[in-house]
Image (tube, rainbow over all chains, first blue to last red; front, top):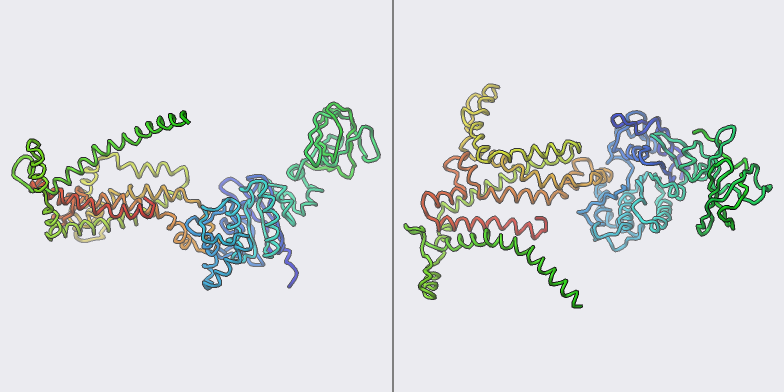
Length: 328
Length: 302
């Protein structure tokens, strides 16, 4: 097998407006074959529009979109090598689970036996064996989610689009399903593109992610790289917590887990500030401590353990290497 | 335990009232008149007041009741089923009602579909436009069609003026005029249930069908249409049932040779003063329209 194409899905200078609203502005983005890629951002940032442009439900006002080298400009949704898992799942309520999964296969004109075999295979993949005859109404939320995934994967799409795939599940199920999604992506070998507003989900799942705001991409990279070196203030705040400290060269950002709290300054940090503990919360594996500096600045620190009490006078420090200088 | 029992009886009293009131209403104004018609349909016509026999003689006691029951028979029904006139009126009604329902569906579905897909802010206005004709008398609206359809009417004048036709079309007093009247008058009854179903449909279902390889028309055929069955059946029942007994539209717009059941009932009742036969026709009509209702309820959609 040839090496994975690094520009398997390609957006070049793509823009899309709805009336006066510029939903996507001049987006250029390459997604590699077999990659698990997340489009991350707050609601209204354009991530869903970007996905709908790829599925063919919207047409770009400017720019080109290619999938596996083929220009999608004149390609209607039903002819694209892309399948989508809808946020609402969009299961056909009048069809059984089996017929829902078979829907796309029938459109390919496969033989009856081949369709039945593929439906079985898909049901096994999402661990819903034996539920083929059920109607969607008779399924739990988690089961519906799996049927939607199986239906979208059944045609063996080159690219699978997942619109907030875990948003409708409860927290425990979401954790389980994250692992499940990752396994299924590796087994199917398809390129997965997930739209989500949940940064933890995006970090846990993605090989790479793009953070969007106001129709534009703020930063693209691996979750670790983006977290460790956010390119903008928006990214820094969207990807986890950030403390902002005023300096003469403008504000610098330090992650809560990079703050060091001691009774006296030590070698462990380059810069120390005097502060008072205003709140201590034990969160099980770690302790969240809120501090107030002498300048009146509130800081959040995350420490592995701590015997600090509210009112304690402490030194709070950080290493220069952990400080981010970012434009607003 | 006792407290629970008390609560139960109080609840049951409330429930009895809630169920009892409409039941009483239906009994008084629906079941009782129906029984009167049924009993009349088993009687014989008479030149008297009331114009049917037998009449129950309460003073004769049990024997009077016995004589009364023995005098009832199914003669009117046998007339209805054997006289070719009534049979052909049944078939005409059935044909016109079926065709009228299909035509109304063909006009109503695209209308309801367009309304359901229209921008959300337009929908109340569009709905109001569909309901608006109800503010005018049904009779007047059907009369208006005479002015439009007759030889010197608006339609012919327009078509002649445009040079589309050289001689006026004879539409009034034909079945075409009846069908136009039916589609016009019953369109809202078709559109409203269809709109209710289509408007609720999740737009992402059609997108999902397209995404899974269906062109737009196929997505409509495989998803939108099957999911609108309840609306289609509901709308068709709401049109078919009243059209079966429709009297005004065939009377005003149809020719004298188009015999529909509603007209038969009217003629027997008022012209021939044969109340029992008119009642028998009405009962058969009732039985006939019950069939599609029962079928629809079996399928659990009505």
